[in-house]
Amino acid sequence: MQEIIWETLEHEPRHNEPEWFWALGIIVVSASIASILLGNALFAVLLIIAGFTLGIYAKRGPTMIKVQINDAGIFINNKFHPYKNIDSFSIDRDMLLIEKHAFLHPLISIPIDHDPEEVANFLKNFLPQKDFKEPLAHRFMEHLGF
Image 1 (cartoon, rainbow, N blue to C red):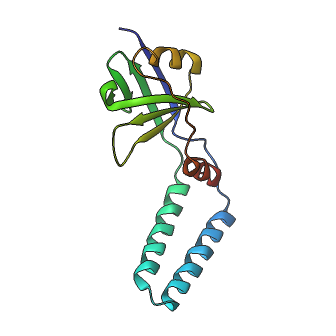
Image 2 (image 1 turned 90 degrees about the vertical axis):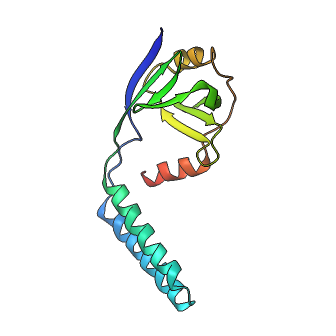
Image 3 (image 1 turned 135 degrees about the vertical axis):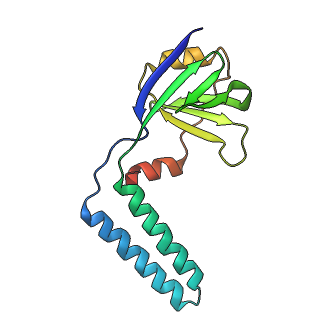
């Protein structure tokens, strides 16, 4: 049984300066005050919770993920994704993009810390390769440091 294994960080580490957190706080507080003034206190509470969560997520660093691709499917941190549940794959900017049948999580992006050509050639034996790009939301969050 042939397999490809690598470990990589879930995203590039990025140090957010204190000014970043101040800007996040100012934006969240301003939007919450505007929401309260417009009579939508529930949305203000949601904004505060979202801002707090975003700040915590930005403070922690990226975690190490282990990827294992073999004849049965793809393991990501010991979570198994069999080929029968995957529609196709693509490689974009050293990211492995997996398109699944799932409704709520149809696309998984995995940083490749291995030879992308070898990964593509291995996966072509089991899945069709399509040419799709990483979603704009993923790129935006990467730009923000997530």
